[in-house]
Image 1 (tube, rainbow, N blue to C red):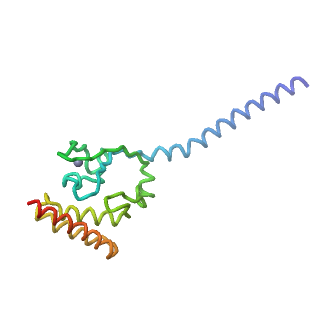
Image 2: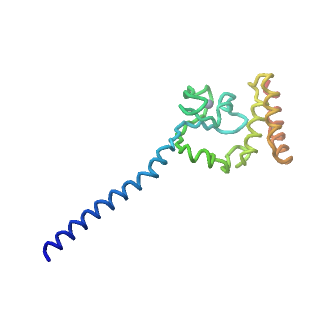
Image 3: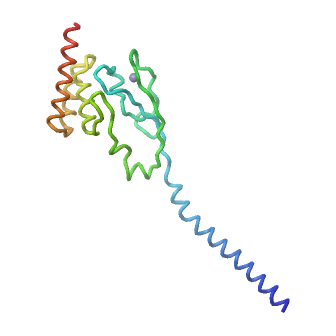
Length: 174
Ligand SMILES: [Zn+2]
């Protein structure tokens, strides 16, 4: 009886060892897949979207700087007088970035209020196009870019009103 129970105990122990080994092998599967998701790190530049924001700041606004991005090295901040640019770290899994692009639905705060992404893009392009420091050659490029963004007519009017106020201020200060 004693021999039987010892043998039984031995078999039981062996079974536990085998089961544990198998469980561990199973676990390895998904962890290999997870390792493929490389974290993407960068520094995102944000600045107020408003007519008095310096041109260099507007041009860099929304860019992400880092090894994995087109702009590898960080810009030298401040850009100049009145620069209010800030860099914030962003970390995403490559997998997330593909399936769920960052900030797709995020609203962006500007001096025109919280805007949808397309409105924000339109407004930013128009601000650059009408900026007092923009080169004439760039103005048309940015007007074209703005015209490619689909926004409601009344929003275009709001932007046009805003810009006409600025243009008046610029011409009266000259
Ligand atoms: Zn700046």
